[in-house]
Length: 627
Image 1 (cartoon, rainbow, N blue to C red):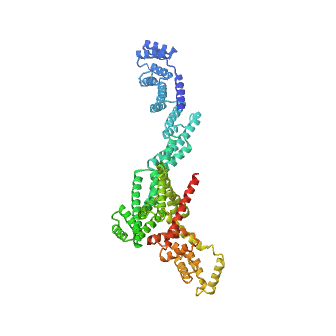
Image 2 (image 1 turned 180 degrees about the vertical axis):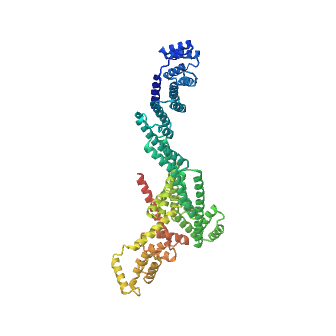
Image 3 (image 1 turned 30 degrees about the horizontal axis):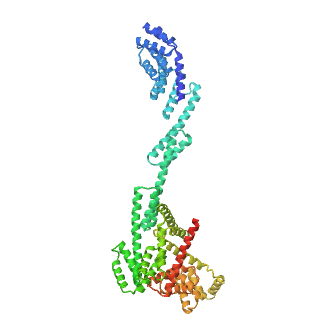
Protein backbone atom coordinates (compact mmCIF):
# COMPACT_ATOMS: atom_id res chain seq x y z
CA UNK A 1 0.00 0.00 0.00
CA UNK A 2 2.87 2.40 0.80
CA UNK A 3 4.29 1.67 -2.64
CA UNK A 4 1.03 2.75 -4.26
CA UNK A 5 1.12 6.00 -2.31
CA UNK A 6 4.70 6.68 -3.45
CA UNK A 7 3.80 6.03 -7.09
CA UNK A 8 0.73 8.23 -6.90
CA UNK A 9 2.70 11.00 -5.24
CA UNK A 10 5.42 10.81 -7.89
CA UNK A 11 2.98 10.92 -10.76
CA UNK A 12 1.01 13.70 -9.10
CA UNK A 13 4.12 15.87 -8.80
CA UNK A 14 5.08 15.00 -12.34
CA UNK A 15 1.78 16.19 -13.73
CA UNK A 16 1.75 19.23 -11.46
CA UNK A 17 5.04 20.37 -12.90
CA UNK A 18 3.91 19.97 -16.47
CA UNK A 19 2.00 23.25 -16.38
CA UNK A 20 1.95 26.11 -13.96
CA UNK A 21 -1.47 27.73 -13.94
CA UNK A 22 -1.44 31.29 -15.20
CA UNK A 23 -5.17 31.71 -14.96
CA UNK A 24 -4.77 34.91 -13.03
CA UNK A 25 -3.98 36.69 -16.28
CA UNK A 26 -6.97 35.21 -18.13
CA UNK A 27 -9.72 35.48 -15.49
CA UNK A 28 -12.19 38.28 -16.13
CA UNK A 29 -12.76 38.97 -12.40
CA UNK A 30 -9.65 41.06 -11.67
CA UNK A 31 -10.19 40.99 -7.90
CA UNK A 32 -10.39 37.17 -7.93
CA UNK A 33 -7.26 37.06 -10.08
CA UNK A 34 -5.48 39.33 -7.62
CA UNK A 35 -6.24 37.03 -4.67
CA UNK A 36 -5.23 33.99 -6.76
CA UNK A 37 -1.83 35.54 -7.59
CA UNK A 38 -1.34 36.51 -3.96
CA UNK A 39 -1.98 32.88 -2.98
CA UNK A 40 0.62 31.62 -5.48
CA UNK A 41 3.28 33.90 -3.96
CA UNK A 42 2.29 33.27 -0.31
CA UNK A 43 4.55 30.90 1.71
CA UNK A 44 2.22 30.36 4.67
CA UNK A 45 -0.16 27.47 3.69
CA UNK A 46 -2.99 28.72 5.87
CA UNK A 47 -2.79 32.21 4.37
CA UNK A 48 -2.67 30.55 0.95
CA UNK A 49 -5.93 28.79 1.77
CA UNK A 50 -7.52 32.14 2.82
CA UNK A 51 -6.52 33.79 -0.48
CA UNK A 52 -7.74 30.81 -2.60
CA UNK A 53 -11.06 30.77 -0.74
CA UNK A 54 -11.49 34.53 -1.35
CA UNK A 55 -10.75 34.06 -5.07
CA UNK A 56 -13.29 31.20 -5.31
CA UNK A 57 -15.85 33.27 -3.41
CA UNK A 58 -15.47 36.01 -6.05
CA UNK A 59 -15.34 33.53 -8.95
CA UNK A 60 -17.04 30.13 -8.07
CA UNK A 61 -15.92 28.50 -11.37
CA UNK A 62 -12.30 29.49 -10.85
CA UNK A 63 -11.07 25.95 -11.67
CA UNK A 64 -7.36 26.72 -11.17
CA UNK A 65 -8.04 28.12 -7.70
CA UNK A 66 -10.10 25.02 -6.81
CA UNK A 67 -7.30 22.77 -8.03
CA UNK A 68 -4.53 24.63 -6.15
CA UNK A 69 -6.65 24.83 -2.99
CA UNK A 70 -6.96 21.00 -3.12
CA UNK A 71 -3.17 20.75 -3.53
CA UNK A 72 -2.62 22.98 -0.48
CA UNK A 73 -4.95 20.84 1.67
CA UNK A 74 -3.20 17.71 0.40
CA UNK A 75 0.20 19.06 1.49
CA UNK A 76 -1.31 19.67 4.91
CA UNK A 77 -2.61 16.04 4.83
CA UNK A 78 -6.16 17.30 5.14
CA UNK A 79 -7.35 14.70 2.66
CA UNK A 80 -11.07 15.26 3.19
CA UNK A 81 -10.90 18.94 2.14
CA UNK A 82 -8.42 18.05 -0.60
CA UNK A 83 -10.85 15.47 -1.99
CA UNK A 84 -13.72 18.01 -1.79
CA UNK A 85 -11.93 20.71 -3.83
CA UNK A 86 -10.36 18.30 -6.32
CA UNK A 87 -13.83 16.90 -6.97
CA UNK A 88 -15.29 20.43 -7.32
CA UNK A 89 -12.55 21.33 -9.79
CA UNK A 90 -13.13 18.13 -11.79
CA UNK A 91 -16.90 18.72 -11.83
CA UNK A 92 -16.73 22.42 -12.80
CA UNK A 93 -17.48 23.20 -16.43
CA UNK A 94 -15.09 25.82 -17.69
CA UNK A 95 -13.72 26.85 -21.07
CA UNK A 96 -10.28 26.75 -19.43
CA UNK A 97 -10.54 23.04 -18.51
CA UNK A 98 -7.91 21.23 -20.57
CA UNK A 99 -7.32 17.51 -21.07
CA UNK A 100 -4.03 17.79 -19.27
CA UNK A 101 -5.72 19.46 -16.27
CA UNK A 102 -8.35 16.70 -16.17
CA UNK A 103 -5.63 14.05 -16.05
CA UNK A 104 -3.94 15.92 -13.21
CA UNK A 105 -7.23 16.20 -11.31
CA UNK A 106 -7.95 12.48 -11.75
CA UNK A 107 -4.51 11.59 -10.45
CA UNK A 108 -4.99 13.80 -7.41
CA UNK A 109 -8.42 12.29 -6.81
CA UNK A 110 -6.89 8.80 -7.04
CA UNK A 111 -4.23 9.80 -4.47
CA UNK A 112 -6.53 11.31 -1.84
CA UNK A 113 -9.18 8.58 -2.43
CA UNK A 114 -6.59 5.96 -1.68
CA UNK A 115 -5.54 7.83 1.50
CA UNK A 116 -9.19 7.99 2.58
CA UNK A 117 -9.69 4.27 1.90
CA UNK A 118 -11.97 4.94 -1.07
CA UNK A 119 -10.28 2.40 -3.30
CA UNK A 120 -13.18 2.15 -5.71
CA UNK A 121 -13.03 5.95 -6.26
CA UNK A 122 -9.25 5.69 -6.75
CA UNK A 123 -9.75 2.90 -9.30
CA UNK A 124 -12.40 4.93 -11.19
CA UNK A 125 -10.15 8.00 -11.22
CA UNK A 126 -7.21 6.02 -12.67
CA UNK A 127 -9.40 4.42 -15.33
CA UNK A 128 -10.59 7.90 -16.30
CA UNK A 129 -6.99 9.16 -16.44
CA UNK A 130 -5.92 6.18 -18.59
CA UNK A 131 -8.76 6.88 -21.04
CA UNK A 132 -7.60 10.52 -21.42
CA UNK A 133 -3.83 9.92 -21.49
CA UNK A 134 -2.11 9.86 -24.89
CA UNK A 135 1.56 9.69 -24.00
CA UNK A 136 2.91 6.07 -23.75
CA UNK A 137 4.86 6.81 -20.56
CA UNK A 138 1.80 8.28 -18.82
CA UNK A 139 -0.41 5.42 -19.99
CA UNK A 140 2.12 2.81 -18.76
CA UNK A 141 2.41 4.51 -15.38
CA UNK A 142 -1.36 4.79 -14.98
CA UNK A 143 -1.85 1.16 -16.04
CA UNK A 144 0.81 -0.12 -13.66
CA UNK A 145 -0.64 1.89 -10.79
CA UNK A 146 -4.16 0.61 -11.53
CA UNK A 147 -2.90 -2.98 -11.59
CA UNK A 148 -1.09 -2.41 -8.33
CA UNK A 149 -4.20 -1.08 -6.59
CA UNK A 150 -6.25 -4.05 -7.80
CA UNK A 151 -3.47 -6.43 -6.67
CA UNK A 152 -3.39 -4.90 -3.20
CA UNK A 153 -7.16 -5.39 -2.95
CA UNK A 154 -6.74 -9.10 -3.71
CA UNK A 155 -8.48 -8.71 -7.09
CA UNK A 156 -5.84 -10.67 -8.94
CA UNK A 157 -7.89 -11.53 -12.01
CA UNK A 158 -8.84 -7.87 -12.52
CA UNK A 159 -5.22 -6.82 -11.94
CA UNK A 160 -3.99 -9.29 -14.59
CA UNK A 161 -6.63 -8.06 -17.03
CA UNK A 162 -5.34 -4.47 -16.73
CA UNK A 163 -1.63 -5.32 -16.59
CA UNK A 164 -1.81 -7.47 -19.73
CA UNK A 165 -2.93 -4.38 -21.68
CA UNK A 166 0.69 -3.28 -21.50
CA UNK A 167 2.27 -4.32 -24.82
CA UNK A 168 5.89 -3.59 -23.97
CA UNK A 169 5.91 0.11 -24.91
CA UNK A 170 7.77 1.96 -23.50
CA UNK A 171 10.32 -0.84 -22.82
CA UNK A 172 11.69 0.69 -19.59
CA UNK A 173 8.59 -0.55 -17.74
CA UNK A 174 8.93 -4.16 -18.99
CA UNK A 175 10.56 -5.50 -15.80
CA UNK A 176 8.05 -3.85 -13.46
CA UNK A 177 5.07 -5.21 -15.38
CA UNK A 178 6.57 -8.71 -15.65
CA UNK A 179 7.25 -8.93 -11.92
CA UNK A 180 3.78 -7.69 -10.97
CA UNK A 181 2.11 -10.04 -13.47
CA UNK A 182 4.05 -13.04 -12.07
CA UNK A 183 3.11 -12.05 -8.52
CA UNK A 184 -0.55 -11.68 -9.50
CA UNK A 185 -0.56 -15.09 -11.22
CA UNK A 186 0.94 -16.77 -8.14
CA UNK A 187 -1.52 -15.05 -5.85
CA UNK A 188 -4.39 -16.00 -8.16
CA UNK A 189 -3.43 -19.68 -7.80
CA UNK A 190 -3.39 -19.28 -4.03
CA UNK A 191 -6.74 -17.49 -4.17
CA UNK A 192 -8.24 -20.37 -6.14
CA UNK A 193 -6.87 -22.84 -3.57
CA UNK A 194 -8.32 -20.67 -0.82
CA UNK A 195 -11.76 -20.71 -2.43
CA UNK A 196 -11.61 -24.50 -2.76
CA UNK A 197 -10.57 -24.77 0.89
CA UNK A 198 -13.44 -22.49 1.97
CA UNK A 199 -15.94 -24.58 -0.01
CA UNK A 200 -14.56 -27.81 1.48
CA UNK A 201 -14.76 -26.38 5.01
CA UNK A 202 -18.36 -25.22 4.51
CA UNK A 203 -19.36 -28.68 3.25
CA UNK A 204 -17.77 -30.36 6.29
CA UNK A 205 -14.77 -31.83 4.42
CA UNK A 206 -12.38 -30.68 7.11
CA UNK A 207 -9.41 -32.86 6.21
CA UNK A 208 -9.51 -31.76 2.56
CA UNK A 209 -9.89 -28.13 3.62
CA UNK A 210 -6.92 -28.39 5.94
CA UNK A 211 -4.73 -29.93 3.23
CA UNK A 212 -5.60 -27.07 0.86
CA UNK A 213 -4.89 -24.41 3.48
CA UNK A 214 -1.59 -26.15 4.25
CA UNK A 215 -0.59 -25.91 0.58
CA UNK A 216 -1.27 -22.17 0.71
CA UNK A 217 0.66 -21.81 3.99
CA UNK A 218 3.69 -23.64 2.54
CA UNK A 219 3.84 -21.10 -0.30
CA UNK A 220 2.85 -17.93 1.53
CA UNK A 221 2.38 -17.90 5.30
CA UNK A 222 0.91 -14.36 5.21
CA UNK A 223 -1.78 -15.08 2.63
CA UNK A 224 -5.05 -13.76 3.98
CA UNK A 225 -6.02 -15.52 7.24
CA UNK A 226 -4.60 -18.94 6.35
CA UNK A 227 -2.78 -19.35 9.69
CA UNK A 228 -5.98 -18.76 11.66
CA UNK A 229 -7.88 -21.13 9.37
CA UNK A 230 -5.34 -23.89 9.97
CA UNK A 231 -5.58 -23.41 13.73
CA UNK A 232 -9.36 -23.44 13.53
CA UNK A 233 -9.41 -26.64 11.47
CA UNK A 234 -6.90 -28.36 13.76
CA UNK A 235 -9.29 -27.70 16.61
CA UNK A 236 -12.28 -28.96 14.60
CA UNK A 237 -10.44 -32.10 13.49
CA UNK A 238 -9.31 -32.81 17.05
CA UNK A 239 -12.92 -32.60 18.19
CA UNK A 240 -14.05 -34.78 15.27
CA UNK A 241 -11.36 -37.35 16.04
CA UNK A 242 -12.39 -37.43 19.67
CA UNK A 243 -16.03 -37.75 18.64
CA UNK A 244 -15.14 -40.73 16.42
CA UNK A 245 -13.14 -42.32 19.25
CA UNK A 246 -16.03 -41.84 21.66
CA UNK A 247 -18.46 -43.23 19.09
CA UNK A 248 -16.35 -46.36 18.60
CA UNK A 249 -16.07 -46.73 22.37
CA UNK A 250 -19.84 -46.34 22.75
CA UNK A 251 -20.44 -48.98 20.09
CA UNK A 252 -18.18 -51.37 21.99
CA UNK A 253 -20.08 -50.62 25.20
CA UNK A 254 -23.39 -51.24 23.41
CA UNK A 255 -22.03 -54.58 22.15
CA UNK A 256 -21.05 -55.61 25.69
CA UNK A 257 -24.45 -54.48 26.93
CA UNK A 258 -26.30 -56.60 24.35
CA UNK A 259 -24.11 -59.60 25.17
CA UNK A 260 -24.97 -59.20 28.84
CA UNK A 261 -21.38 -58.32 29.79
CA UNK A 262 -22.60 -55.43 31.88
CA UNK A 263 -19.41 -55.13 33.93
CA UNK A 264 -17.39 -54.21 30.83
CA UNK A 265 -20.10 -51.86 29.54
CA UNK A 266 -20.30 -50.20 32.95
CA UNK A 267 -16.53 -49.70 33.09
CA UNK A 268 -16.57 -47.97 29.68
CA UNK A 269 -19.48 -45.68 30.54
CA UNK A 270 -17.91 -44.75 33.88
CA UNK A 271 -14.65 -43.84 32.13
CA UNK A 272 -16.48 -41.75 29.51
CA UNK A 273 -18.56 -40.04 32.18
CA UNK A 274 -15.33 -38.84 33.81
CA UNK A 275 -13.49 -37.86 30.63
CA UNK A 276 -16.33 -36.52 28.45
CA UNK A 277 -19.47 -36.06 30.52
CA UNK A 278 -22.69 -35.52 28.58
CA UNK A 279 -26.40 -36.07 29.11
CA UNK A 280 -26.35 -39.05 26.71
CA UNK A 281 -23.45 -40.79 28.48
CA UNK A 282 -24.96 -40.00 31.86
CA UNK A 283 -28.26 -41.58 30.77
CA UNK A 284 -26.48 -44.67 29.39
CA UNK A 285 -24.41 -45.03 32.55
CA UNK A 286 -27.50 -44.82 34.73
CA UNK A 287 -29.31 -47.38 32.58
CA UNK A 288 -26.44 -49.89 32.73
CA UNK A 289 -25.91 -49.27 36.44
CA UNK A 290 -29.55 -50.09 37.08
CA UNK A 291 -29.39 -53.16 34.85
CA UNK A 292 -26.12 -54.29 36.45
CA UNK A 293 -27.52 -53.78 39.93
CA UNK A 294 -30.60 -55.80 39.03
CA UNK A 295 -28.46 -58.52 37.53
CA UNK A 296 -26.10 -58.53 40.50
CA UNK A 297 -29.00 -58.56 42.92
CA UNK A 298 -30.70 -61.38 41.02
CA UNK A 299 -27.49 -63.40 40.97
CA UNK A 300 -26.96 -62.74 44.66
CA UNK A 301 -30.49 -63.82 45.45
CA UNK A 302 -30.05 -66.93 43.32
CA UNK A 303 -26.78 -67.80 45.09
CA UNK A 304 -28.39 -67.23 48.46
CA UNK A 305 -31.38 -69.32 47.41
CA UNK A 306 -29.16 -72.22 46.34
CA UNK A 307 -27.23 -71.90 49.60
CA UNK A 308 -30.55 -72.08 51.47
CA UNK A 309 -31.64 -75.14 49.52
CA UNK A 310 -28.31 -76.86 50.23
CA UNK A 311 -28.64 -76.00 53.89
CA UNK A 312 -32.18 -77.47 53.93
CA UNK A 313 -30.96 -80.59 52.18
CA UNK A 314 -28.37 -81.17 54.88
CA UNK A 315 -30.69 -80.07 57.69
CA UNK A 316 -28.60 -77.00 58.49
CA UNK A 317 -31.68 -75.11 59.66
CA UNK A 318 -29.78 -72.07 60.96
CA UNK A 319 -27.99 -71.46 57.67
CA UNK A 320 -31.19 -72.00 55.72
CA UNK A 321 -33.13 -69.53 57.88
CA UNK A 322 -30.40 -66.91 57.46
CA UNK A 323 -30.38 -67.33 53.65
CA UNK A 324 -34.16 -67.20 53.16
CA UNK A 325 -34.62 -64.29 55.56
CA UNK A 326 -31.96 -62.37 53.68
CA UNK A 327 -33.74 -63.11 50.39
CA UNK A 328 -37.13 -61.99 51.71
CA UNK A 329 -35.71 -58.70 53.00
CA UNK A 330 -34.53 -57.90 49.49
CA UNK A 331 -37.38 -59.42 47.45
CA UNK A 332 -40.37 -60.81 49.38
CA UNK A 333 -41.73 -62.45 46.21
CA UNK A 334 -38.55 -64.27 45.16
CA UNK A 335 -39.47 -67.81 44.14
CA UNK A 336 -40.78 -69.84 47.11
CA UNK A 337 -38.44 -68.26 49.68
CA UNK A 338 -41.27 -67.80 52.22
CA UNK A 339 -42.28 -71.43 51.95
CA UNK A 340 -38.67 -72.55 52.33
CA UNK A 341 -38.20 -70.25 55.34
CA UNK A 342 -41.23 -71.79 57.03
CA UNK A 343 -39.81 -75.25 56.32
CA UNK A 344 -36.46 -74.31 57.90
CA UNK A 345 -38.13 -72.74 60.93
CA UNK A 346 -40.19 -75.87 61.47
CA UNK A 347 -37.05 -78.01 61.25
CA UNK A 348 -35.32 -75.73 63.72
CA UNK A 349 -38.10 -76.22 66.26
CA UNK A 350 -37.48 -79.95 66.24
CA UNK A 351 -33.68 -79.66 66.49
CA UNK A 352 -31.92 -80.22 69.83
CA UNK A 353 -29.93 -77.36 71.34
CA UNK A 354 -26.53 -79.04 71.01
CA UNK A 355 -26.86 -79.63 67.27
CA UNK A 356 -28.23 -76.11 66.84
CA UNK A 357 -25.22 -74.59 68.58
CA UNK A 358 -22.86 -76.63 66.38
CA UNK A 359 -24.67 -75.41 63.27
CA UNK A 360 -24.49 -71.76 64.34
CA UNK A 361 -20.84 -72.14 65.25
CA UNK A 362 -19.90 -73.78 61.93
CA UNK A 363 -21.87 -71.14 60.03
CA UNK A 364 -20.07 -68.37 61.92
CA UNK A 365 -16.65 -69.79 61.12
CA UNK A 366 -17.51 -70.17 57.44
CA UNK A 367 -18.74 -66.56 57.33
CA UNK A 368 -15.50 -65.36 58.94
CA UNK A 369 -13.51 -67.17 56.27
CA UNK A 370 -15.48 -65.23 53.66
CA UNK A 371 -14.98 -62.02 55.68
CA UNK A 372 -18.75 -61.69 55.95
CA UNK A 373 -18.58 -60.12 59.40
CA UNK A 374 -22.29 -59.36 59.71
CA UNK A 375 -23.29 -62.96 59.01
CA UNK A 376 -20.53 -64.32 61.26
CA UNK A 377 -21.52 -62.02 64.12
CA UNK A 378 -25.19 -62.98 63.88
CA UNK A 379 -24.41 -66.71 63.92
CA UNK A 380 -21.86 -66.56 66.74
CA UNK A 381 -24.04 -64.31 68.88
CA UNK A 382 -26.71 -66.98 68.72
CA UNK A 383 -24.10 -69.46 69.89
CA UNK A 384 -23.18 -67.15 72.77
CA UNK A 385 -26.83 -66.68 73.70
CA UNK A 386 -27.37 -70.42 73.86
CA UNK A 387 -24.02 -71.25 75.48
CA UNK A 388 -21.70 -68.33 76.36
CA UNK A 389 -18.79 -70.68 77.11
CA UNK A 390 -19.00 -72.75 73.94
CA UNK A 391 -15.48 -73.33 72.60
CA UNK A 392 -13.85 -69.99 71.63
CA UNK A 393 -17.03 -68.15 70.68
CA UNK A 394 -16.22 -65.12 72.86
CA UNK A 395 -12.76 -64.62 71.34
CA UNK A 396 -14.23 -65.00 67.86
CA UNK A 397 -16.83 -62.33 68.61
CA UNK A 398 -14.05 -60.05 69.85
CA UNK A 399 -12.10 -60.69 66.65
CA UNK A 400 -15.16 -59.72 64.60
CA UNK A 401 -15.57 -56.56 66.67
CA UNK A 402 -11.92 -55.67 66.02
CA UNK A 403 -12.37 -56.14 62.31
CA UNK A 404 -15.46 -53.90 62.31
CA UNK A 405 -13.66 -51.22 64.34
CA UNK A 406 -10.72 -51.32 61.97
CA UNK A 407 -13.03 -50.79 59.01
CA UNK A 408 -14.83 -47.93 60.77
CA UNK A 409 -11.52 -46.23 61.59
CA UNK A 410 -10.83 -45.49 57.92
CA UNK A 411 -11.27 -41.68 57.47
CA UNK A 412 -14.35 -40.71 55.49
CA UNK A 413 -12.29 -38.28 53.42
CA UNK A 414 -10.39 -41.17 51.92
CA UNK A 415 -13.50 -42.78 50.42
CA UNK A 416 -13.44 -40.79 47.22
CA UNK A 417 -9.83 -41.49 46.21
CA UNK A 418 -10.17 -45.14 47.30
CA UNK A 419 -13.32 -45.55 45.21
CA UNK A 420 -11.61 -43.94 42.25
CA UNK A 421 -8.58 -46.22 42.63
CA UNK A 422 -10.78 -49.31 42.98
CA UNK A 423 -12.76 -48.38 39.89
CA UNK A 424 -9.54 -47.98 37.92
CA UNK A 425 -8.15 -51.31 39.15
CA UNK A 426 -11.46 -53.05 38.46
CA UNK A 427 -11.53 -51.81 34.85
CA UNK A 428 -7.91 -52.88 34.41
CA UNK A 429 -8.71 -56.37 35.74
CA UNK A 430 -11.70 -56.73 33.40
CA UNK A 431 -9.56 -55.74 30.43
CA UNK A 432 -6.86 -58.27 31.39
CA UNK A 433 -9.49 -61.00 31.78
CA UNK A 434 -10.87 -60.10 28.38
CA UNK A 435 -7.32 -60.63 27.01
CA UNK A 436 -7.05 -63.92 28.97
CA UNK A 437 -4.02 -62.54 30.83
CA UNK A 438 -4.94 -64.54 33.93
CA UNK A 439 -1.81 -63.99 36.03
CA UNK A 440 -1.88 -60.22 35.58
CA UNK A 441 -5.63 -60.15 36.21
CA UNK A 442 -5.23 -62.10 39.46
CA UNK A 443 -2.61 -59.64 40.73
CA UNK A 444 -4.92 -56.68 40.10
CA UNK A 445 -7.94 -58.44 41.61
CA UNK A 446 -5.97 -59.35 44.72
CA UNK A 447 -5.05 -55.68 45.11
CA UNK A 448 -8.77 -54.84 45.08
CA UNK A 449 -9.61 -57.65 47.50
CA UNK A 450 -6.98 -56.46 49.97
CA UNK A 451 -8.35 -52.91 49.91
CA UNK A 452 -12.06 -53.77 49.79
CA UNK A 453 -13.00 -57.46 50.09
CA UNK A 454 -16.69 -56.76 49.41
CA UNK A 455 -16.10 -54.56 46.36
CA UNK A 456 -18.58 -55.46 43.60
CA UNK A 457 -18.12 -59.09 42.49
CA UNK A 458 -14.35 -59.18 43.04
CA UNK A 459 -14.51 -62.44 45.04
CA UNK A 460 -16.29 -64.16 42.17
CA UNK A 461 -13.79 -62.78 39.68
CA UNK A 462 -10.88 -64.01 41.79
CA UNK A 463 -12.45 -67.46 41.85
CA UNK A 464 -12.95 -67.37 38.08
CA UNK A 465 -9.36 -66.35 37.40
CA UNK A 466 -7.97 -68.94 39.81
CA UNK A 467 -10.01 -71.63 38.08
CA UNK A 468 -8.53 -70.57 34.74
CA UNK A 469 -5.02 -70.64 36.20
CA UNK A 470 -5.65 -74.05 37.77
CA UNK A 471 -6.75 -75.44 34.42
CA UNK A 472 -3.73 -74.02 32.64
CA UNK A 473 -1.34 -75.06 35.42
CA UNK A 474 -2.47 -78.68 35.61
CA UNK A 475 -2.50 -79.03 31.85
CA UNK A 476 1.07 -77.74 31.65
CA UNK A 477 2.08 -79.92 34.59
CA UNK A 478 0.67 -82.92 32.78
CA UNK A 479 2.72 -82.02 29.72
CA UNK A 480 5.91 -81.91 31.79
CA UNK A 481 5.57 -83.72 35.14
CA UNK A 482 8.36 -82.86 37.62
CA UNK A 483 8.58 -86.50 38.70
CA UNK A 484 9.04 -87.84 35.22
CA UNK A 485 12.78 -88.21 35.49
CA UNK A 486 12.53 -91.29 33.36
CA UNK A 487 9.79 -89.86 31.16
CA UNK A 488 12.00 -89.90 28.06
CA UNK A 489 12.70 -93.60 28.57
CA UNK A 490 9.08 -94.15 29.27
CA UNK A 491 7.97 -92.55 26.04
CA UNK A 492 10.67 -94.42 24.13
CA UNK A 493 9.16 -97.56 25.63
CA UNK A 494 5.74 -96.40 24.58
CA UNK A 495 6.98 -95.78 21.06
CA UNK A 496 8.63 -99.21 20.88
CA UNK A 497 5.49 -100.82 22.26
CA UNK A 498 3.46 -99.06 19.60
CA UNK A 499 5.71 -100.59 16.98
CA UNK A 500 5.71 -104.04 18.51
CA UNK A 501 1.98 -104.21 19.41
CA UNK A 502 0.21 -101.91 16.91
CA UNK A 503 -3.00 -103.92 16.65
CA UNK A 504 -3.80 -104.42 20.30
CA UNK A 505 -2.65 -100.93 21.28
CA UNK A 506 -0.52 -102.51 23.95
CA UNK A 507 1.78 -99.49 24.05
CA UNK A 508 -0.43 -98.14 26.85
CA UNK A 509 -0.10 -101.25 28.98
CA UNK A 510 0.97 -99.31 32.14
CA UNK A 511 -2.06 -97.67 33.86
CA UNK A 512 -0.03 -94.71 35.17
CA UNK A 513 1.24 -94.02 31.66
CA UNK A 514 -2.30 -94.19 30.27
CA UNK A 515 -3.53 -91.81 32.97
CA UNK A 516 -0.79 -89.26 32.22
CA UNK A 517 -1.44 -89.66 28.50
CA UNK A 518 -5.16 -88.86 28.95
CA UNK A 519 -4.27 -85.98 31.26
CA UNK A 520 -1.92 -84.58 28.62
CA UNK A 521 -4.69 -84.88 26.01
CA UNK A 522 -7.15 -83.10 28.32
CA UNK A 523 -9.33 -86.17 28.88
CA UNK A 524 -9.58 -85.70 32.67
CA UNK A 525 -12.47 -88.12 33.11
CA UNK A 526 -10.58 -91.02 31.54
CA UNK A 527 -7.48 -90.22 33.61
CA UNK A 528 -9.54 -90.07 36.81
CA UNK A 529 -11.22 -93.40 36.07
CA UNK A 530 -7.81 -95.08 35.67
CA UNK A 531 -6.62 -93.74 39.02
CA UNK A 532 -9.91 -94.77 40.65
CA UNK A 533 -9.50 -98.36 39.41
CA UNK A 534 -5.88 -98.39 40.55
CA UNK A 535 -6.93 -97.12 44.00
CA UNK A 536 -9.73 -99.69 44.20
CA UNK A 537 -7.22 -102.47 43.61
CA UNK A 538 -4.59 -100.93 45.92
CA UNK A 539 -6.36 -98.82 48.64
CA UNK A 540 -3.12 -98.48 50.55
CA UNK A 541 -1.21 -96.89 47.68
CA UNK A 542 -0.98 -93.38 49.15
CA UNK A 543 0.71 -91.73 46.18
CA UNK A 544 -2.45 -92.20 44.08
CA UNK A 545 -4.55 -89.83 46.21
CA UNK A 546 -2.77 -86.63 45.25
CA UNK A 547 -3.05 -86.86 41.41
CA UNK A 548 -6.65 -88.05 41.76
CA UNK A 549 -7.46 -85.10 44.04
CA UNK A 550 -5.88 -82.72 41.51
CA UNK A 551 -8.04 -84.22 38.76
CA UNK A 552 -11.22 -83.84 40.87
CA UNK A 553 -10.35 -80.18 41.47
CA UNK A 554 -9.72 -79.71 37.78
CA UNK A 555 -13.09 -81.28 36.95
CA UNK A 556 -14.84 -79.30 39.68
CA UNK A 557 -16.16 -82.45 41.33
CA UNK A 558 -17.70 -82.15 44.81
CA UNK A 559 -19.51 -85.49 44.96
CA UNK A 560 -19.14 -88.11 47.69
CA UNK A 561 -16.27 -89.90 45.95
CA UNK A 562 -14.31 -86.64 45.57
CA UNK A 563 -14.91 -85.75 49.22
CA UNK A 564 -13.54 -89.15 50.32
CA UNK A 565 -10.32 -88.52 48.42
CA UNK A 566 -10.08 -84.96 49.80
CA UNK A 567 -10.57 -86.29 53.34
CA UNK A 568 -7.72 -88.76 52.85
CA UNK A 569 -5.45 -85.92 51.71
CA UNK A 570 -6.22 -84.06 54.95
CA UNK A 571 -6.09 -87.08 57.26
CA UNK A 572 -2.78 -88.32 55.82
CA UNK A 573 -1.48 -84.74 55.71
CA UNK A 574 -0.23 -85.25 52.16
CA UNK A 575 1.78 -82.31 50.83
CA UNK A 576 -0.03 -80.63 47.95
CA UNK A 577 -0.16 -77.04 46.64
CA UNK A 578 -3.96 -77.36 46.76
CA UNK A 579 -4.12 -78.00 50.52
CA UNK A 580 -6.02 -74.84 51.38
CA UNK A 581 -8.43 -75.26 48.49
CA UNK A 582 -9.20 -78.84 49.56
CA UNK A 583 -9.73 -77.76 53.18
CA UNK A 584 -12.07 -75.00 52.04
CA UNK A 585 -14.14 -77.46 49.97
CA UNK A 586 -14.34 -79.90 52.88
CA UNK A 587 -15.34 -77.11 55.28
CA UNK A 588 -18.08 -76.04 52.94
CA UNK A 589 -19.26 -79.61 52.55
CA UNK A 590 -19.35 -80.16 56.32
CA UNK A 591 -21.32 -76.99 56.80
CA UNK A 592 -23.84 -77.99 54.16
CA UNK A 593 -24.19 -81.48 55.64
CA UNK A 594 -24.33 -80.14 59.18
CA UNK A 595 -21.67 -82.60 60.32
CA UNK A 596 -19.92 -82.00 63.62
CA UNK A 597 -17.69 -85.06 63.96
CA UNK A 598 -14.00 -84.87 64.75
CA UNK A 599 -12.97 -84.71 61.10
CA UNK A 600 -15.34 -81.81 60.48
CA UNK A 601 -14.11 -79.85 63.49
CA UNK A 602 -10.51 -80.54 62.47
CA UNK A 603 -11.07 -79.27 58.95
CA UNK A 604 -13.00 -76.19 60.10
CA UNK A 605 -10.33 -75.30 62.63
CA UNK A 606 -7.60 -75.74 60.01
CA UNK A 607 -9.49 -73.54 57.58
CA UNK A 608 -10.03 -70.89 60.24
CA UNK A 609 -6.37 -71.06 61.24
CA UNK A 610 -5.25 -70.63 57.63
CA UNK A 611 -7.53 -67.62 57.22
CA UNK A 612 -6.31 -66.07 60.49
CA UNK A 613 -2.68 -66.53 59.46
CA UNK A 614 -3.40 -64.95 56.11
CA UNK A 615 -5.04 -61.95 57.76
CA UNK A 616 -2.17 -61.55 60.22
CA UNK A 617 0.36 -61.82 57.44
CA UNK A 618 -1.50 -59.13 55.51
CA UNK A 619 -1.58 -56.87 58.59
CA UNK A 620 2.16 -57.34 59.19
CA UNK A 621 2.90 -56.55 55.57
CA UNK A 622 0.82 -53.40 55.76
CA UNK A 623 2.56 -52.35 58.99
CA UNK A 624 6.00 -52.94 57.48
CA UNK A 625 5.01 -50.98 54.39
CA UNK A 626 3.71 -48.17 56.59
CA UNK A 627 6.96 -48.18 58.56
